[in-house]
Structures are given as C-alpha cells and as structure tokens.
Image (tube, rainbow, N blue to C red; front, top):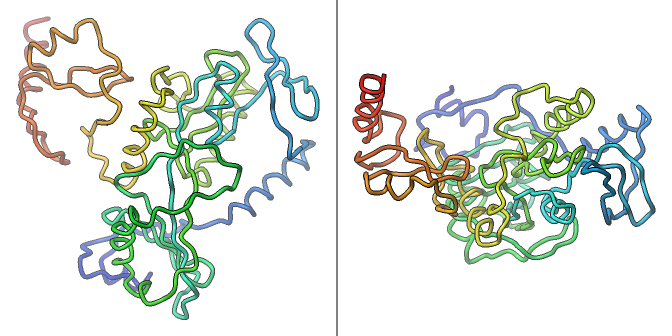
Length: 354
C-alpha cells in the first residue's frame, strides 16, 4: 500500500487530490502480445510442433462420441484431441460441434493520445476503477482504456483483428471521467479511439476443460479481456489435463461443464454481457449477485419460497433463496443488513433440526 504522494512519484501525470491510498505491485509488468505470441510459437516449433495459418476448421470427425479428427479447408487431420481456442468465435465454432460455450462479444475501447514529451515509458499501469479506466504509457503518449459501467453488446460478424465504429456519444461521459485522472491528456491530440469486440463469460471466469458433450474436445476460451495475463496458466492447465487425463489444479470455477443451455440464447447473453463487462471495474462485494438475465431457472420449491418472503440470488443458474424476511440495503464489506435473518435461520437449523 502506498500513499498519494508515492502514487504521484510513480506516475507524475496522475491527479491525486482525491486519492487516499494506492496499491503498487513492484514486479508487475507489460508485454507486447505480438512478441509474446511469436516467442510461444517459436518454442512450440522447437519442440516439434507445426503451426498452419489461414486454414478454416469446417467440421469435427467423431466416433462413439469422441474426437478422432477434423476437416479443414486444407484437408483432413487425424487427431485424438481438439482444443477450441476460438476466442470470441468459440461459441459459434462450438455450436457447430454440439458443444456449449456461452461467451459473448461486447464493444471494448481504448484511446491513444499523440506523443507527450513528459511521458516515461517505464511508468507502471494505473488502474482507476472508480473512473472505469486503466492508463499506461504507449507509443510515446498514453493509452486510456475503459471498462465502462454499462457496456454495449456486439452480435455481428467481424473478421479477425476487425474494428467497430466507435460510439462517441455513449463513450463521451466515460472518457471525460477517465481523463480526469490524467488531466494533461486533454491538452494533446487523440491519435485513435479504438473499438473492437472482446468476449466475456456470464460470470467473468474462463471456460476451460473437456466438453461434457464430446470426449477429447477441450475448450480454452472466455478469458474476459485478460488473456494476455491468464493465457499461459490456462494453456498449461489444459495441456497437463490432456496429458494426464485430469486437471492438476482446482478448476471447479472455470470448468466449461458449468455452462447452461439458456446462457447461449441471444436474449440472455446480449443482456448479461453488458453487466459482465461493467462488473470488471466495479467493487466485487461478497454478497453481490448478477441482476441481468435472471429468473431463467427455478426449483420446484420456488413458489413456496416466495410465499415465505425469500430474497433470491443466482447460484449455478438457479434462483436460490439467500435469506428470508431480512432487510435489503446497500452492498458493503461489513455486516449485511439481512445478517439477523441469516443468524436466526442458521440458529433454527442448528438447534431445532438436530
């Protein structure tokens, strides 16, 4: 933890008059995604791997509900394993093979300024969740990236590395807030406001592992805009899973088998992604539960629980009773306003249901 003065010393262009404290990760860093990809590809080739680009996967060949090969625009490939790393196209690719992968693309933005004489490329990345922004040196100027609180879904086809026309009217209030953290940005020109599709999962957790619908069909997708950070760990976990037959880490929260059919419907995913992206930089309170795309799955006891004044939260897709008759209130890190209802319920179970 560092104070406002130390924040200023690390990133002198930051306005810190409203900063109480910051968190500094000294061994954090940045990497060029292109260079990182080329380095991984080089290592893969040195180990005997083959990379073929510009080839479309047109079908999966199966026998007895297991992968035995795939058809491509360059011919047939026999293989015991397939890994769907299709990014924002993973859902469509999986659907053609009967595999459920409910990720959804949303508009994702960052602004690049013209060169600024007083920018040091060694400065760290500044994350400012209250203003939905991350800021870092880039190309002699600054990059101001956004995870806006209310996102916009994107459900049209787009080629790899394609761009979307920016919605300046929607973004203007967010850009104004983001740039207030580094006011000098407003004194230089804008090189580019980039908008491209970025996919997110309903719960902001990756979708990895062997698909329950098809043996030896693995998924490594839904990395929620931080694939450059989580990609190496996901790749290592999936590789070890394929080699050993079981994952070598706890993947309960990431396993693709947690997905539900309704999560792939347009009505659900197009609304849920707006909240999912918006949650990235919102405070992750312990009792927060998603609001978009709710009420899709109910237990047989739902009506009875409603009669008993249950307040519900989303648990594995179901509307599950969180507490009964308690008071609602703002989210916080302290004791929730419905704690008394929880306490009485737990006491009743412990003392009366023995």
